Image 1: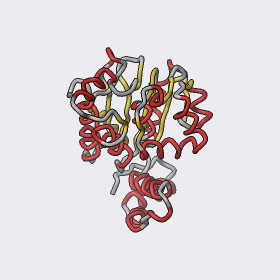
Image 2: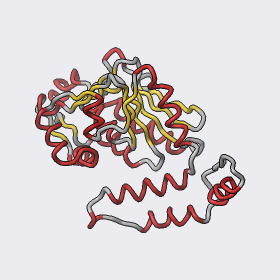
Image 3: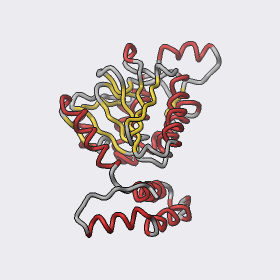
Length: 261
């Protein structure tokens, strides 16, 4: 799978590339497993500040699961579902990783691709991107965790429309719904995404980590929230070397150099 899922470090940015362009980056079971492993690798690399996810080839982010495998999976007695297994493990790995994640999307972002994108913290889309979850057109059960991530972005009414109609949405429609954060002309996507990601990477890692942990708790049911670790991470910011550096840089009117300590 090393050729289908590429894991790279580009300075302080860890890049996860879905590299199956001849099939519009459709993802097989083995590729979902490799995605989870790639996230773990980038998470463990202390030099990585931000993780990006994108598709190779220019025509698709991810066009979905590899449907050509569905008949074989049924013959092997496996349920065709977007719940559990390597698929959910990969999405959960992206959703739970402590570092900020950014999906950079052009072309098709459908089904499992949409699930991968909404598992990231932020989504930047080219104006040619197309989104959709065609589960209802394939009689595929869609897992609760994946639905919750969609609801967090577009609300219950928006999630119902996405799931019930199975329709495809333009990038501008996705932006209005809240499915993506930014829509950029295709020719400007790479330059914009680089500047956007580097702006995040240059900020204080401890602050971003604490904010991501707090926001994750706020997205949970109030009865299930546990603030202990979040409060520890917030307090850590105030006693860190980076807090002292940020204060000095502000007073000296210079750019801070954060180390994550």
